[in-house]
Amino acid sequence: MRILVVGGGAREDALSWRLAASPSCEVLLHAPGNAGTLTRGTNWPDVAATDARTIVRRAQEERIDLVVLGPETAIAAGVGDKLREAGIAVFGPNRSAGRLETSKVFAKRFMERHRIPTAQFKVVHNLDQARRALDGWRGGAVVKADGLAAGKGVVVCDDGGSALAVLADWYTKNKIPGGGSDVVIEERLSGREVSVFAIADGSTMIPVAAACDYKRAGDDDQGPNTGGMGAYSPPAGFPADLLDVVRERVVAPVLRGLLADGERYRGVLYCGLMQTERGLFVIEFNARWGDPETQVLMPRVDGDFARYLASAANGALETGAATWSQDACVGVVIATSRYPYENTPVSGLPADLDLGDGVVAFWGTSARENGTVSSPGGRVLTVTARAEDLAAARARAYEAIAALKTRFPSGTPLTYRGDIARL
Ligand code: AMP
Ligand code: GLY
Image (cartoon, rainbow, N blue to C red; front, side, top):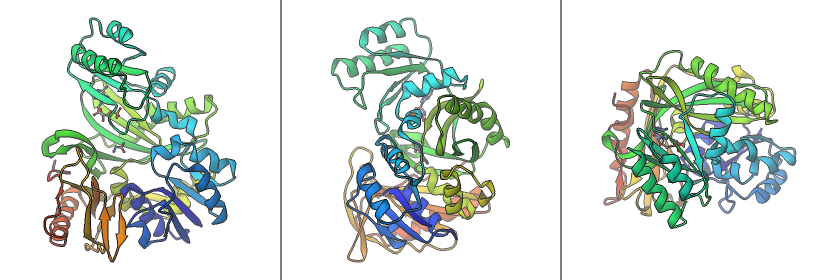
């Protein structure tokens, strides 16, 4: 198979790495790709993940058999729709089903309609409505801007008053993250979070693996929210039948709802869940693989992953083509030290990341130059280690980072959390 991976972050590097190791994968291309993907195939550095027209044209020229969509921006730009119209198999949903991620209002109403457990909510369009909605509000509140806001559209508040302050700021300055005017206000839940990934081929949808990610910048969940500072899989401290419970309470009604709406969802559905005292609730859906969760899910995959994704994209999932091993994997993100406030470009990083048995590192946005790697900063690398249990995987990941650090040019401003998978 000739496979095109759309995107250029560490998630796409991990997907590309696993696809490259699949018997069915003959040729790999990436739009735009990064310093890691370049070692396994061709990059199209000038093709943005959202440039549907160019991606379709070049996929046709290159006789691509399967396209794997990475980022939500590609899904929202309709790259999946355009490729399918051109008769090319795509792992990743169409734009309309992608609204489960790209529109909080759509997702909440979908969950309400199909009786999927989620926090109680109200939708408001202006400050007056927000005032009325929050009048007499009891307990914590979470405000969520409707559109795609790159992680900046959700604010968790201790009470209704602080939620109203956030909304007053957004509405009076006309600065709602994502650029829309609708906002979801919902009850604040408490509990542990876990991400469950379900694979869909248009008529079935099966939860296959789970992971926990770390969103705050600092150890012990201190500091600002980020795109994710680390992850591990499988999750510890959740019931052994987590995937079965998610299948029954979440994935089955999602699939029924999608089919009733005429959607044939082909790709992965990321269910962001919270285990509360009242049971499992959906916090969010994403229409794609998670970042950094994918970096810890790919090393656990056994089998022919390329054939597996192609079977889903072609509408007949071969469930046995790939399986997730019992082994654990821990991933630690190395970021530039001012992240997430500021991205500091770094260069002269070692291109060869051979870090030993069971250890693989994935590049974020990056380029190769004169035998080294440069990065615009932010999340530079995810260092992952697979081992028979979580403690061993964690130890191996941090040993690899200690060794790797000595190979960075001195003074490179990098930082990482020290408590990933410390349970
Ligand atoms: P989202 O973009 O919807 O995933 O929200 C980002 C983060 O905000 C989640 O990972 C949770 O940590 C938090 N969050 C979102 N909704 C709620 C809620 N209803 N109750 C408590 N925390 C929430
Ligand atoms: N790890 C969070 C996300 O991918 O949205």
